[in-house]
Length: 406
Image 1 (cartoon, rainbow, N blue to C red):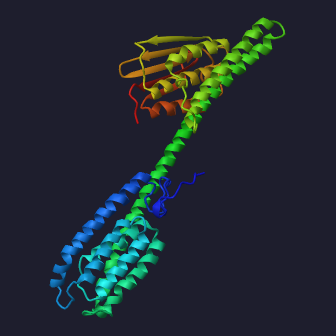
Image 2 (image 1 turned 90 degrees about the vertical axis):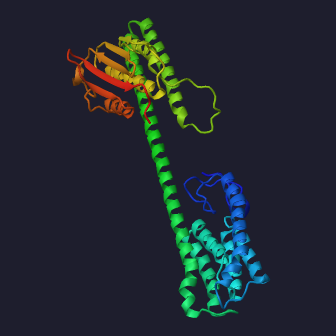
Image 3 (image 1 turned 45 degrees about the vertical axis):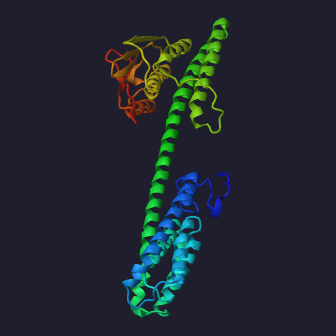
């Protein structure tokens, strides 16, 4: 739910939602940007139009015989039509109404077509560009009617019906331009909104994958340890106690890792210090937890361990974690070996086991856990392979480039 924001002068809401136009048509621009534009650029434009009107009205009259030479009333109308543009983005309807009235008075007095029409053009464009089409049309219609009064009632030579088309063009053309600009702006805003929604969906899927990896691994280890405890409780209670201790430790580690994973979707947190994301440096700790669950794991590291990009480090760890979880679930009595190889341009991880190979449920290449690993690795530009090993058991291999890819 949006929190209501105080209204800025002229009804512009300070907290316009990104991707949707506010009442001033700014499409979620930052409030200070809107104020800067309306308070600086629009007055500058108004002064330029005023200067154009004062300097150009006289020459325009000289080139149009039969019109009334500009006088004080003419220059007053020119000044009003130009200066009102200074508030065009705050009050577009009022700007158009004042500009249309000033322009109509100027023309009814018989003065020549001149720079005053440029100010009127800007006012019509503003209404079309910053208001929805229906309200803009309802504002432009009366403005057109007021402008065309001079066609039949003028102190100079009245053009009559012959002047309707060129007179109407001063409304139709800027209105069409403004509507086109607004539609393009709306389309761009929708594209930004759809892109933001797509990125949010991808982030949710990423978090769901992280939760699947953390919870799946933790529950598999806890289940195995609980089975051991139940089996040993009647005859060897001291060993059962060790299994229960391992359950406590595994559940705590899983909860801590889950808390770090879900921190990305928190809102309004205090920004306090949190544990770092899992990485390959934590594989030995993972090995120790699985040893307590009854799965002996050996870890071999070749090359010089070094800091990796966060996404690469996390992906490598998740591949090892998911592969060992599958061994725990599906391989039966087995041992596992993890090999981590650091190379200048990549890091490779390999997990092999001595279990039932591809025969167990979920061990095939089409398993959802393997599909998740493959997607995670390929998204970073790496390669992934999984299948029965040549000498029995199962093998998972992933190679990841050391440079993150966007």
